[in-house]
Length: 265
Image (cartoon, rainbow, N blue to C red; front, side, top):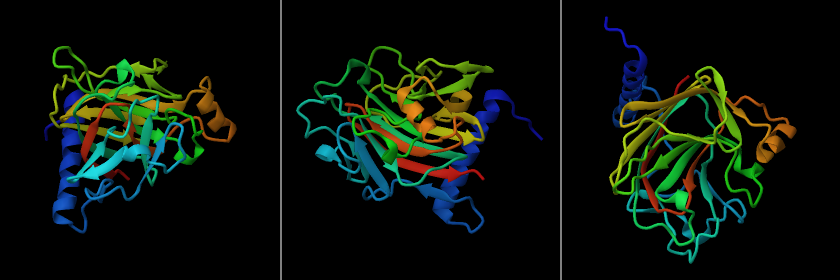
């Protein structure tokens, strides 16, 4: 029997999980793992927006919408971005899963968006419940799988790690930088990219087009962060084993045509 080790094992495992998920959808085998289509391709049923400065559920400017079977983050109702960071939360929380997203960046960044947010979005996992966010809070306390697009010339990795209100462990040590690059390729233009997140126990993998590009463990609340402290003071556990999943709005149009999840019991 062939043995898989290191990166080859991670890539093979991700491919196997993707195959199982696809089989469950295509054939609905009674004994197949249940693949959950978080995005149904028709509407935003099961999702709830939270945009900075607005009440939970207020989808200002129809920022999050579904057109032609695609979930779009759009800004045609914005004159300026003005720090209105948005997150679209799925209704259930999860732990131990494989999440698969197909995304692409389109069009031009809305006026007033920060320079770092050019072709920038993200998948927020292990997040706080949206009802616990302050009205003017920019980002949920979470682990961010940062999605980035290239500018046509320069290298820019995707499926990076950012940690709003959190920390992780890398190479056996507490890792506190806010953002950490993956080892992915750069994806320029409006091509579709497949990003996956595999959460098993306290270990998390980022996978892009079948290749593992980042691995870390022990996600946890950062007691030095003001938003995280509020959660800790409300008796939240410091070590994160699951939480909400949300998609970001950070001032550049982005589309998602697949958001599916396979629970790993």
